[in-house]
Image 1: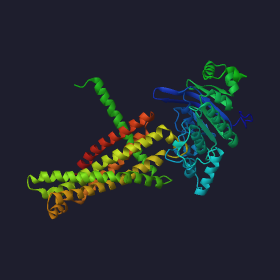
Image 2: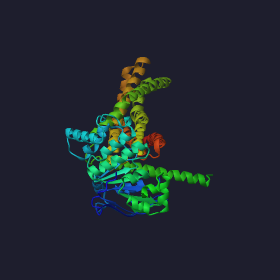
Image 3: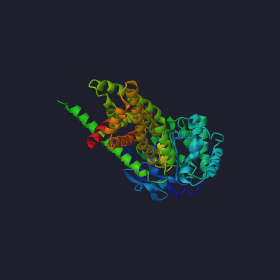
Image 4: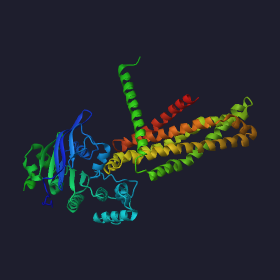
Amino acid sequence: MRSDQSPDTSAVAIRVTNVHKSFGEHAVLRGIELTINRGQITTVIGGSGSGKTVLIKHMIGLIKPDEGSIEVDGENIVNMPEHDIIRVRRKFGMLFQHSALFDSMTVEENIAFPLYEHTDYNRAQVRDLVQEKLEMLHLTGEGEKWPAELSGGMRKRVALARAIMLNPEFLIYDEPTTGLDPVLCSQVDDMIVTTQEQLGITTIVISHDMASTFRIAHQVAMIFDGQILVSGTPESVVASNLQPVEQFITTSGVRLEAIRG
Amino acid sequence: MLSAPLLDRVGHRGITLIHEVGAMVLLFVRALRALFARPVRWRLFVQQLEFIGGGSLFIVLLTGSFTGLVLALQLVDGFSRFQAEGLTGATMSLALCREMGPVLTGLIVTGRVGSAMATELGTMRVTEQIDALKTMAVDPIQYLVSPRILAGLFMVPVLTLFFTMVALIGAEYVTVELMGVDRGLYEGNIRNVLMAKDIYIGVVKSVVFGITITTVACYKGYHAFGGARGVGNATTQSVVFSFISIFILDYVITAIWL
């Protein structure tokens, strides 16, 4: 189901160069090198606590690295003043692991939030745009509900609607399938691929779900020991025959032979 | 003689405390600066005014009236031992305006509002809602902290005023109607003794308490970590820290003023 027409693979959207980050004594990132290609789905895999989320937070300027540079659309954001970082951050939409919907707002208000914050649309225009997104994500009629009343899968879709409201250039999913049953997992995979194809958004998925990764990713990068151990197409990552990669894949219940075909 | 490990622990706690107080002051300054940034969050400010004021008014009135009632009973009884019941009103008005009004209101607001703020922000932190705000390019300090501190700054003095008023009304009822002290004497003594500066100090205290309660609650909530348990800890710490701060600041302000 992974789409094979990959637009302009040469265009680098985000370039992470030699990024180091320690929290106290604990070195989480130790020289990360990674490029994210425009218009593709890149999946960052790695064990729990390997620093996947920390790496993502660097890309949107929520965390500053101790060393190294992060270029978004050719701009180094590391020493950027806060005002400019906010401008860069508006290029991103992010789906948090637990959706992070505002529980003091209804579904509609959650989805409308970025519009009220960053656009001058009037109420009617906002309502139309919200309805459009609700329909696109099969949430029609759920707008009046509170986040607490929704199932896990629905919350993800509401969070996605909120994340794509301002037509971001980049969309980040933080462990989108964690804690979902297999049917929901594959629905979320569909959602990621469909959104990417419909909107052409450069997509970054953090995951330790190998089955999902090989279904949707154009590019895979594996974090191991604070560095990118291997990156490339899923096929080339499997073909690398590196022991941590194989171990990671086999222990997650995916048969190597099945991927290698 | 203090043992070395004990000294070590005390010193460590001391440094942590100083660090925290400093971080709270910084948060307050950042929140204040964010008030002047666009967009102005009127709706959130009014919501917080309503939450602090409307939500606490009933309990403030209730506590205030009983404080006045019981204090008057005690004072009339105490003063009657040297035939000075007429001083009840004057003494009460000083005590309430300068001390009891601001301090007791501060404690009530801490328990009712400070704890709720710490819990709300703490929950938003651990469920990544604060990170979500940031990724949507919204400054969480400006969105969450500034309206709360500003509302505390305005509303705690208003609540204090209500507290003091009902306490004085209750005290007059007990003293004049129940204990039979002459009303003219009671009110005349208040007029003679109570000065504008006694009211000012109460207002200054309540403004400081309002800022302190909301800043502490926002700081503790904003920096909560570790799931539901972490939020619980943040709430407890915020209430304890505010209580202690109110008593210490009360002493400091009084000492400077007098």
